[in-house]
Image 1 (spheres, one colour):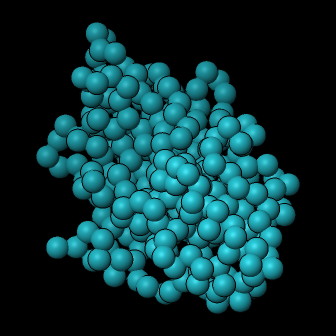
Image 2 (spheres, rainbow, N blue to C red):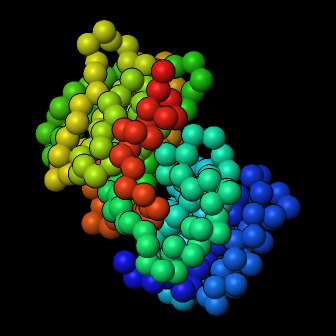
Image 3 (cartoon, one colour):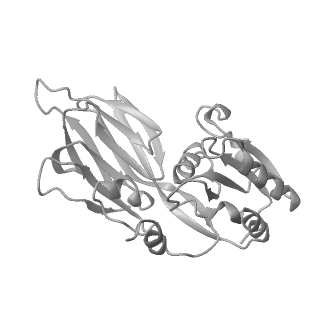
Amino acid sequence: MENLKKFLIIVNRTKDPDLATAKEVESTIRETGCLVTGILQGDDLYEEGRVPDDLLLRSDAAIVLGGDGTIIHASHVMRHHPIPMIGVNLGTVGFLSDVPRNEIRGMVRRLTWGDYYLEDRMLLEGIVHREGREEKYIALNDAVFARKSLLRLIAVEIYLNGRLFDTTEADGIIISSPTGSTGYNLSAGGPIVSPSAEVLILTPISPYSLSRRSVVFGSEDAITLKLVAKRENSENKAVVSFDGYDNIDLDVDDYVEVRASRKHASLIRMTEKSMYEILRQKIGG
């Protein structure tokens, strides 16, 4: 692999409040004769919700300090010019950010030597249609189409490649990438999918039916979710969320198209450990 020399550090201040870990990473990088292009530690340092392109263009990779949520957030704010990411796990589960804090020095040296592996992860592209406008979004984990009211189900028409596939009443619908299959999708009863797969996973959230199940579609498919009126006296409101960061309110007849993006996220790994081995270690019995 390419020897990495210029690093952007993205840190979760909740997990590293005194920046002790960020400073350790920075000093280790400088000891190797390499460059720290910047340390980002909050949304206030981003421009219009994203890392400035010129900073990304000056960086070979991003070292992300936090947990899986921090990796997802980093992917979100670097979506316009993604660079490879590696996560140092300061959280709990760590499917994506799997480097322990006590291995930082070895990790940095191996990155500068080119001793690492790259994993490409499929991204989701969402197009929200509302008020006569189209708004585009990217997600690493999932797009969640959910009720806005705390007490009422929503009715959703599901279209596959433009044709009606199903109509369901539920708390919502999750469309997950393979990376997101171990997140909200798993909690809602959806399947675990290999992160190297190129598929879309549709999982209902608490559907009002005994027969509703998750369905896996190909990466060439396009899924459309449309909010429809359930009852005249109901509050027919919904919200769609992309990776939990972009949250858009929806009214009846608004709809969302989700498909595989042409872009991919690139994760740096220190070992070629199987995701299933990680699953067994993290949440196995």
